[in-house]
Length: 243
Figure (cartoon, rainbow, N blue to C red):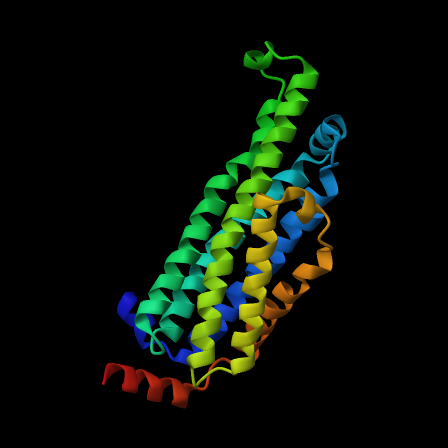
């Protein structure tokens, strides 16, 4: 199987990576904006618990969307390594480790997404807690999910930083994509480190600051889907790297 993947044309690999990246973006936006963003009421554990119980299928669908996004990103990470290793195998591998680390953190952190359903379930072993306590525990688990999500984004930001540098040094992808990815990576890293180090300051950062991240990843996704890579130049760079 590995040999067959290696022999696949670089343009096809690029388009598969673009399709998977599109799944990551759509699934991630759905889970974060249309599920958690719609059901979680900041500062109101009771209202959040009520929304989750009233829309349990939607809440579970958000979990499934995150799961699909993580699986797709692992595929993106592997395929981009195959495409970019002619530029620098060492840096492509290092970037891949960051991408896989972010995926692993995201996958483990998804437990915190489902935890509210266990706290809010009508189970006998929860009788030691009153409803206010259970609602508070459910809200805490969602807060922990948010923090875990931010930790994973730091690793994804580092992955993007390596991708941006590799694309800048490549001859088979537009360098502007590398610039956009580098800007996206900086936005991710600055925003999330601000959350960890200066929460009061981070709360004042307007949402549109993260727009370059969507532009960078969206541009790469569309290019890979529509144009792929310049196969002739990719083979030339791959041959030069082997030599």
